[in-house]
Length: 331
Image (tube, rainbow, N blue to C red):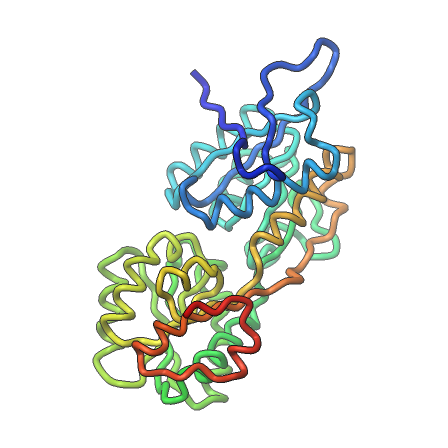
């Protein structure tokens, strides 16, 4: 039996009606959604709820008009490829996806079905679009983070932990934007400007993450940037445990949920807002516009969260500048 997932029970405003069968003579439009998270993770559920709510507001709440097929890849490359093939075989009218590996998997399967990305860091550098104003072909969407964010993370780390001497930026080259190189120039420039040593930490599994943390924590003054990526997000419990054990100040590239779980500081684009905005492009494509004519949009809303309890455990005093800028302060 072909697996089918419908969005339902995401809250009264975001509830999505189940499509059983189109009325005779009606054509039900089909959206494919490929998510990089596990469906139990809030990082995936909240953005998807915002997307479905906005689609309903745009006129797609009628079950006679639209069905939605959702697949959750759970940071598994084989599942990404399998579900990409599956959604293309279902001949969706448009497919929404987030994350470079998902877009790459979909691109291998189709050059005709419209694809809208939500939260892609480097669409031009990855070769998915020809340019931001005119994407061309069948892919467009909403970018997540500009490369200059690499410098901003270093700056924030030195504000909250002024004794930092070495900063590592950690990523998995198999899943991070442009194999992890996207943020490096800005990261290294900021480190030089702030007179801290820059360390590039490539990791592929839990053991390599632990090796990086242990090495960085051997001497005082170490700190770490956790690049925004599904690989690091699904391992946040392990990373939080290791940075705590090694007394490392850490900044995450996004996700207030990480800070609620005990992370120190996060700063990045609001993924929920990006998914909400992406519904407008799905709507326009369903109404006949071509993805290649829709310019890639940049993020407009950023979120900062800080955990005062974690800061205290690290012996840090959170500066007023961060407290005033934070959207969420966990005590």
